[in-house]
Length: 432
Image (tube, rainbow, N blue to C red; front, side, top):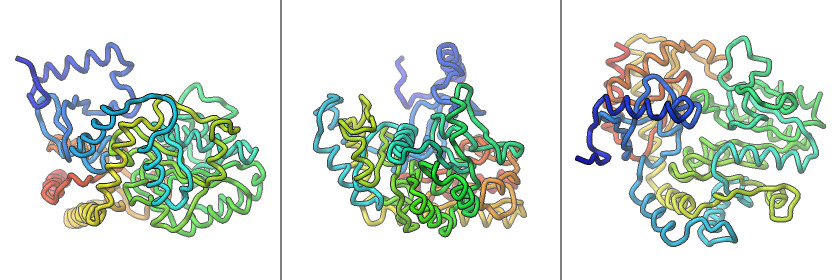
């Protein structure tokens, strides 16, 4: 008997897969964030659901850290991607029309985008943005904010989910990071404009860039104060620094124009990834034409990649935009998000639970703490043990939220009101 993707398998099969992976892959996973408890083996994903190797179905709110805005294995996206690669695969030379059409689309929607470069991951995009900023300013230092994650490279892989004793000092997340690169990164509190102002007064001539997750979704959902974001725009202009909005998570998920369009504040450069191609590997660096032109062939900033703008991913992104352009896509998505958040708040209030529901649009998260939620230090009050145990109990009931402290949840267009209501029923059972 041969098993297809829908055939339930035994626990022994699950264990065999885990043992095989751990034998040949360090830790059994190909990304540091993938090994969690419970360690499940998934064999199929469809719409709003994941299926494990034992055939159990889960309503998925992890969504691969956010790319699946339309849902898993969207039939039209997959069809267009397959058609594209049957006609043209990675030729590694020249231009093609679909790549140009996608760049045109992004420039028509994202306020900061006058030109676009394509790559494959958010880390690549932020790396390129910082290199470009250093090149055009002739400066070395950058400012990032506590709680924001911008990828795995040395300049930014620090001070994300830091312990209390590391707040206010450097908290690098990996061995092997260059000390001089770490030293050139200044970490400041999110939503604290005065700290930025004082830093620029003291070091303004050395700051190449300010890089910001507009909403630090890597710690759940901490909304920015408009005055803070507008102040960053004003200060970076005054001191000649490049303002970079990292919209790897917020881009397309919160609107085709990104969260910058929601706020009405325009950066110099924007990085995009995740949801722009509904799970296909694609990222972009967009921004002012005079800046991006430094990266043209023969320019003084090198930018390259064998798989950049792969026709399969470009087709997936164009199809994703086509679906999101439909007039009810975002209203429906946001209605589901609000239904979830309102339902969670009702349960918490009725059960007398010490918790706070945060979110925006299709993202939601329940912190086990009292408000406010305005900066990373507020989240030190979150009960991490309750946070993770709550999610593990939901997983037992077929609701998949990543069982890791402070991580956000995502709703897709594939979710239904019935999925939301089933989830709220499970939440009520767990919190009871």
